Amino acid sequence: MAKYKGKSVRLNKPFRTPGKSKKFAVYVKNKSTGRVQVVRFGDPKMRIKKNIPARKRSFMARHGATLKKVRGQKSLAPVYWAIKSWRWLIDGYTYFLVGLMLGLSGLINNSLVKRKKGKRNEL
Image (cartoon, rainbow, N blue to C red):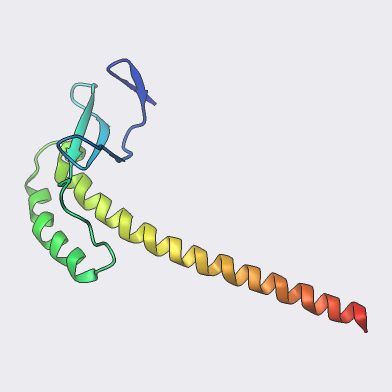
């Protein structure tokens, strides 16, 4: 936890900013000055359609070159967090689905084991 304008904040964790100029923001510590800064990114009027792979490829193609042009600390650039959020959103969604499937298969397997045990006890 770090201090920003007197309040305790979590560093490097994007959050939504309703009613602000951008859709997301993140608190980042500037390595050269040692101060905590707010980096805002994302258009509040646009929706991220993260489940369409063609959109992800197009976004990465547009912004990957921009990130290479950034000099100094990359985490202070909004494009860095925009790219990272696209990766997290898609990968997070995939992990959620995989976890959901594994959880359901675990529940199904447990219920089958209980049924088999019940049948054995009946015999």
